[in-house]
Image (cartoon, rainbow, N blue to C red):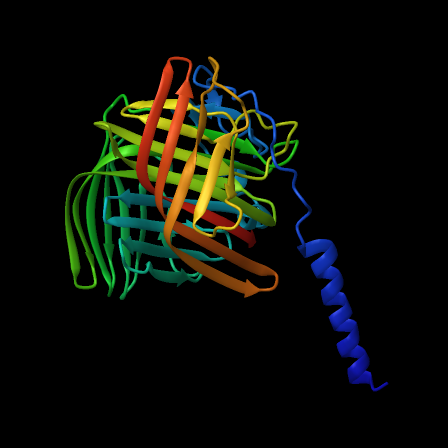
Length: 376
């Protein structure tokens, strides 16, 4: 056999071995029982230890723990594993709009996704090389997130802890929005470990039921918004090389109340995980849900079913059940072998009910379901 054939065969064999034994994610058991849903509202201290590990696992409704990422940026390897994103979403009856800036350590990107009802989703993505400057907000309630180039600019400003300014300018999008909320609006702060020693983790602040006003221009279509609803998804964490999630998010007015839901399936360490990110909002109040499973209905690529694994509610958490009906979807794929990403987003409507110890709350709101799988 010629030398070049031997080398080609050896390289192909090595690639197959890497794919099977290293790059292929190990199977993760799905949560089929509940977590204790540990509340950390009365816990003081820091999100991270001095060694850069998660100090606590659980959730809170208020920013009781201080975020300081300095232990995560002390070495080159830490910087590669550290992921950051700031995301803002707007839901109206006719428009779903998602705006984001993300820094995943070795590359940054900003993207805009818009779904106008009865039209196909549109997207714009700007890949930002490491040598170009970006700024990420110091916390979810303070600081500025920004990027600026000759063809694209983005600016997220915390005007105060309850008010944000969102500005985007590109060839296809011009966005100028104000997000504001009441002083007593509850959120979810999530502290989720991926491994037992909590050196890999996801720390997130998701805040729903913002009142949104301003202007959105998408091509030739312009929206003048007043008193619409939106959310902030602010995430920081040290992720494993194999990362994936399933996220369901909805927001709207139903029966005269501001309703929002947040459901997410993440890889979790069963020993150290004390809570899930699943929750439901009615006006200013957050209702903690038990662990939620989302499943695409058998025989249908348009319908998703979701429910909590707990049969009924208790004093610690409520139960939920319902369906999501997709109207349109969008797929984004990147495959560079070592670096790989696939995101599938479904746009549509949620309908269902939440049961608490005080009764049943029915809902029907606009939203999306997102599936993401990556090597990063």
